[in-house]
Length: 267
Ligand SMILES: NC(=O)c1ccc[n+]([C@@H]2O[C@H](COP(=O)([O-])OP(=O)(O)OC[C@H]3O[C@@H](n4cnc5c(N)ncnc54)[C@H](OP(=O)(O)O)[C@@H]3O)[C@@H](O)[C@H]2O)c1
Image 1 (cartoon, protein in one colour):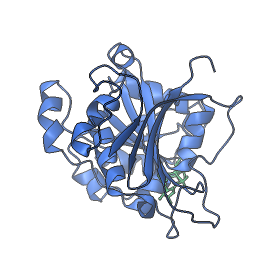
Image 2 (cartoon, helix red, strand yellow):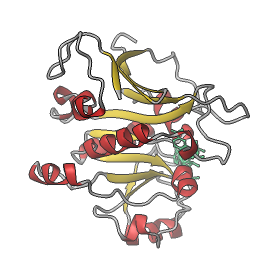
Image 3 (cartoon, helix red, strand yellow):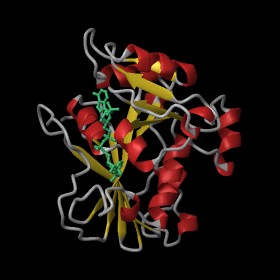
């Protein structure tokens, strides 16, 4: 793995002019650290981690994202999970990709526990329908109870079923079946989970963007031209004004680019 940007020094990183050339020298924990001045002050920082083909597809031919990924993408995926308090994911991605509970990672679990955090991030699923299989390991074998985020007017029978195995959070306007994304982010932060990571999918990310709650995008761009009609990494309402982002870091391995963009504070 090569670090292409920043070319200037960042705290703790090797001096410019001696950019690291090997994976061992790229400190992913440092490059992807959440901003302590935000998260330690009790405010949420929402990061998205998405992968795209070179021509903008968010799904491979089989409709899933795994075919777009690479070993380096999987390493970064693991680091981002290890740094997060909660992984926010749309119910369609959970169903399509057969989500399982997060696994403790030996390199991080002890440090997380020592800091008073659970060894793994909580998985938090956004759903209107509550059409989830509550008998699967995602609910029955999670180290920390899986959260289900839904709206106030959800189906009462399904809500009762969810409450038997999941930690249910209602986050929406009175009378709505859908989740209000701002309320959802704030509800998670109110529990002390300020390091937020969303793994999509595109519908969820589009709504987080429209609600102007996206602080950071970690985008893996794979060297594939897929064609076809796959969606982009966002698929939903447009924000009132386009969200401007700033490039902070750029890594490369095997032709894949790993860019980290944060919101431009002026717009
Ligand atoms: N390229 C990537 O990085 C990437 C990442 C993730 C996923 N994917 C791919 O993307 C596809 C799935 O993405 P998707 O965009 O179709 O779906 P998604 O964003 O994963 O999930 C959409 C679902 O989330 C729930 N939802 C969304 N907004 C809601 C709201 N405001 N209130 C309540 N519930 C809400 C609904 O669940 P209910 O239907 O239960 O009501 C909705 O059907 C899969 O093929 C997956 O492989 C790609």
